[in-house]
Image (cartoon, rainbow, N blue to C red; front, side, top):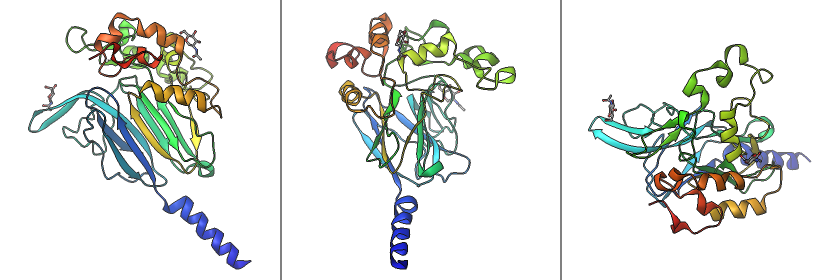
Length: 300
Ligand SMILES: *[C@@H]1O[C@H](CO)[C@@H](O)[C@H](O)[C@H]1NC(C)=O
Ligand SMILES: *[C@@H]1O[C@H](CO)[C@@H](O)[C@H](O)[C@H]1NC(C)=O
């Protein structure tokens, strides 16, 4: 009996505390992405907090078992001078490749994690609460319990971004990001702040609906929890920038568990892909290909 207890205790410790999680960060965009990583207040610093990822490349990082924090992609980065590395979107203000404890300047699509939380579950989401800059997919692999559904915002939204939320000049680099209404207008109703700081007083807006319709599983405003938080235990995670369409189609077919919402809203995708800017200005594969159309049909 006691031997069994010891045996199970060892197994328990091994599976829940010792074994780290891995994040495989993949760039499927047509341009280089500079991922940034930020640990939460009570989490260990990661071995890397920022690096460059050229198209088609991936980097695997060991993540401590109870880590919480966020991952995002920076775009249009350069060493402007020897002491000034900065990015047009998602910049972390460190002036270096590594973010070293700084977060992303909005707007930026964020993948958020709390690993090994309540009941040993990992909690994860993709958030557009701070706006959007890149399509992102979070895909758990090898999970042992929990819904373990994929989440993300798989659509190129910059071209379809409402005019008042746009970042970038069409004639220069195109629209490079799409602000949240909170950032654009600073209105407490959009920010869920002041008199609107509870789930009952802060609801969706026409602007948050724009994001939610395109990306039904992503957080579109601060209290969008019910359809936006996912759980899994014992998984490793793929974090993919500009996920290719065949991934999403496969997932849509394969994952029914705990994910009532589609990963991609095909009707929105159709609308977005016919926007005049969507194809010409995207740094990533265009939305048309997500509907099953050829890859080569648009952006270069
Ligand atoms: C770094 O370079 C960028 C782009 O030229 C510029 O906007 C920014 O102000 C510079 N930052 C510093 C601290 O020099
Ligand atoms: C998909 O988009 C359409 C058009 O914006 C919207 O009416 C519908 O509610 C969306 N579906 C989901 C599941 O978000």
